Image (tube, rainbow over all chains, first blue to last red; front, side, top):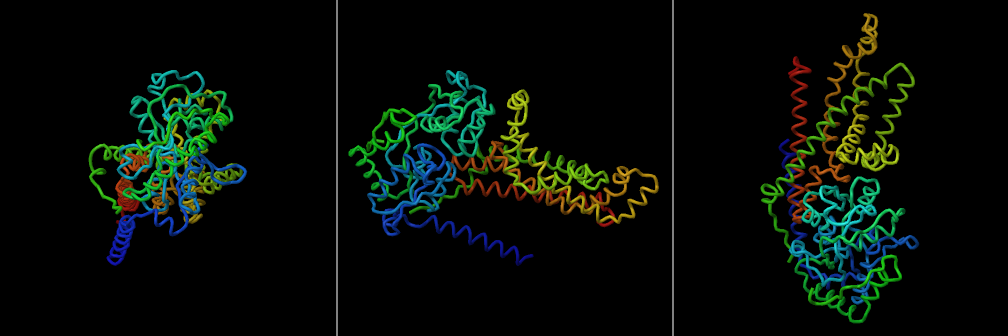
Length: 274
Length: 234
């Protein structure tokens, strides 16, 4: 028994120390990515049009992926996409399973303590998707059940904006939307661009709408490991160039513009100020 | 340099500590109710499985095979999302006004675990020599009364160790309820991680709580077994 305890203790210590050693590795992702010749990006794979699996090619495509492709092209390396969820993306980055997060991640001060963000590459606001005609203002959602996805800022925002509502966090947005379809929640909340994607794919979309009720502003940034200055500078420089050359606008129009089902106007620019 | 700063204080006091406590309460509620119901249903299914009336036996057999051989997570989604398609609209409307997440999770855990418990009890019953049942029947006991007074009290005693395993599994499996939004212990640990990014501390704390919970369940049943069921062996 004593021997067993000792063995377990040793194993636990090795595990903890191994983890600490991993976390303490010095970071120069830019040099590392160039050396291994591949940029590993954490992306969403069920969130059109940011990151989702194309029905024909079975590849992950989307707005986020186009930015990663542009960065990799500039670096002269290949791209490897790894699906992540809102809850798993930060640990995946910190444990070096991925080099960069391009997964609809909102920039906020709490997160900025853990990761370094690029300049804002997408800008949206948090809204709701509801049964048609049921919600006209935030008041209509007071005391109601509202669905969202775990580990997202949406969850924290809605708790602040409507304290009387009870928030139900599902593993992903499609599940939250299923709960809305079945009347288990009165609304699903997250960023408008994501909601538009969910609504566009819904089989019975005529029954739902996105009322003009906004509870927060959501600037998205690409996430990189804290203190990884060379890499952050490189990514920022690249996306600023993309803005200048018009490529960033082209990518926006490709996924959200008038020719798509979203009809969104690009009301932001990638600048060095945010 | 990347370094992870450990900060254990976030899980031992303040807001996040309260989240863990409320998660533990939810886990305790769902586990306690689950243990009681799954034992009762398991007992019923075990008796049905040994019935001499074929349709009853077949029903119990089908129940066992179905619920033992499909993943719990799938069953959980079935009770929560799938039941919507089967039930009439007015029942769905009523369910949506209640805490249906908790109910669906409890039903899934109970039914899943009861299938395993039924088999454990049946093997306990089979280990009692069949002459005892024959003697009881010839002494005028009906089948059910013979089960109730003669066979089951002995069988349950033998079944205690495997039952403990099922109860522990149930308590730990209750963490799957987080996938349908039940705010139990694992849900809260994940919540703490997404608010504070202190996942290591949050999940370590949750792991410790599960460990303590399991040890308490084991100890309680061990006490019951030695003091009450088998006083002469203590």
